[in-house]
Every structure is written in C-alpha cells, then in structure tokens.
View 1 (cartoon, helix red, strand yellow):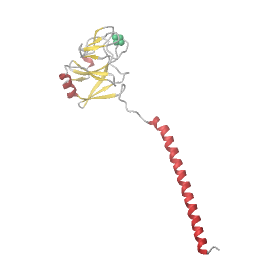
View 2 (cartoon, helix red, strand yellow; view 1 turned 120 degrees about the horizontal axis):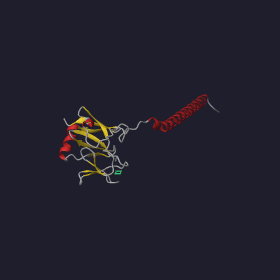
View 3 (cartoon, helix red, strand yellow; view 1 turned 60 degrees about the vertical axis):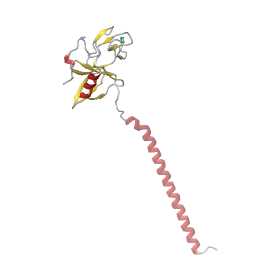
View 4 (tube, helix red, strand yellow; view 1 turned 135 degrees about the vertical axis):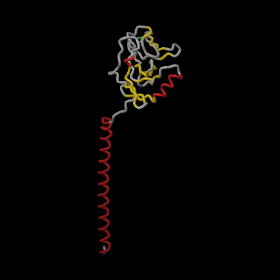
Amino acid sequence: MIRPHDESSLKAGGLIARLKRRQLLRMGFLGGTLLAVSEIGGVFLPFFWVNKITGLGGKVGVGNKAEILAKFQATKAAPILYTESKFFLIHAPGAIAAAYRRCTHLGCAVPWTPAEDQFHCPCHGSLFDKNTATVKGGPAPRPLDLFHVSDQGGSIVVDTNPLDLMVRSGNAWDPAHVEVTDA
Ligand code: FES
C-alpha cells in the first residue's frame, strides 16, 4: 500500500527526473550549436584573415638611419642583404639606396661577393658595383633596379613593390635617384 507521503515523494522524484532530462537536452542542443558555429568559423575564418606582408611587395623597415650609416662605415660599405624582401641596402654616393637583387640580364638572384668587393651574378657572370649597383661587366643590359626608400623620422623604410621600381637606363649613378641622403 502506498501512503500519501510516498506518493508525493514519487511525484517529486519524477519531476526532478523530467527537469534533469530537459536540462540534459538543453545542454546537448547548446553544445551541438557551439560545435557547429566553431566548425563554420574554422572553415571561413582563414578567408578573412589578412596575412602580414614580410617579403617582397611590402614596406620594410630597415632600422635607424644613423645605425645603418655606422654599419656602412664599419664594413667599408658592404651591402646589407634582406633575403626575404630580395634587396640590398647600398651606400650610394652620399645616400642610402636599395637595390633589387634580381639580375637585369635574365633574373637570377644576385649575391654580394665580398672576396671580389662587388656583386657577381652566378648565372652568366654579370658584375655590379657595390655602391651604385651599376654594371661593371657581363651581359646585364642595365644596372640593378632600385626600390624607393624613405626616411620616416629617422627610420628608413624600403618600399619593395616590384611594380614601382626605379628602372635605370643609363649606367652612371644618377643623383636624381637619391631619396635618402647621408646628411
Ligand atoms: S641572369 Fe645574371 S648574368 Fe644572366
């Protein structure tokens, strides 16, 4: 025989079980929704993510002007290579310039050759002057192209946009290409 007291506890037990079931269902639904949202986000987020440009094409900060000039002085103006951005900082007459290291003959990457004190293209032997990147020998038809440089409050920035090069037709250093002077 079930006493009234027992009946009410049974009712209370059923109610608790129903509440728990509802809570479980709700939590399951929420969990499923969160999972779906995070999966959709994972698929689409990379399309909206803007990668930082560090290589060729971006504006590259190369440091303090005074420090660059001190480095040139300490190394007898050895060109400073920025491998990822494909240029050399060179100490042109009275100026800091940036030479795109793509050979103007057939496009090989031109290395600085300290033993020769000049740039020496390994592909067909073109030689370029260390200060001006003008042609000293070989089949290259013109000096290495120059990137635009700017002095932004003492910090030097090189614009490595390959569509905005200073293409030099003559083989002599032209002061018209100077954008950042030593002074
Ligand atoms: S590509 Fe440099 S000399 Fe031919």
